[in-house]
Length: 138
Image (cartoon, rainbow, N blue to C red; front, side):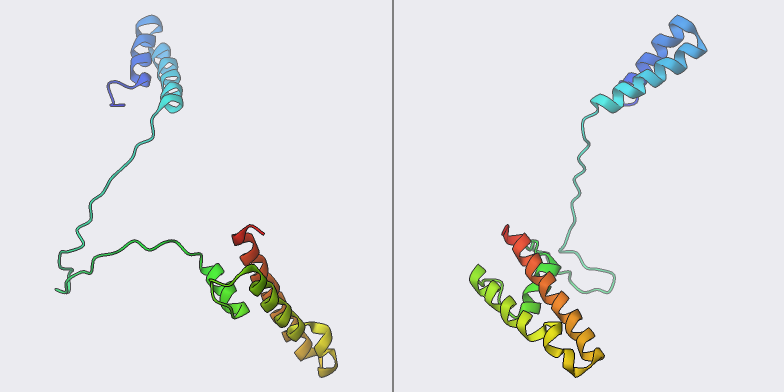
């Protein structure tokens, strides 16, 4: 709503006519409440010219929309060593293989440093599996 058409100014003027200065304040506040309750969302559109030269004189390249892919999801696939097109069974199989390889109990005899590193890698593999399963709704 424009400045003169908003409820806060209309109610403020009516309140001033009825009760003076205090009426204006109460009317203004009541109108502000109405404005906040019944305001339509404002949508702003901008136009960006991608074909003009930038400050260095080079021609800007036109941006193309890419589908949104979560970076952590890509990292999860990379951690398990499988492509994003892998089936659910392939994800489970890759997790099993890596979980057996990096399970902390398997490297317990190699020392504390190897065990801590195996625990860290095991947590990464488990988190990657959880991220993929959440993304797939499993």
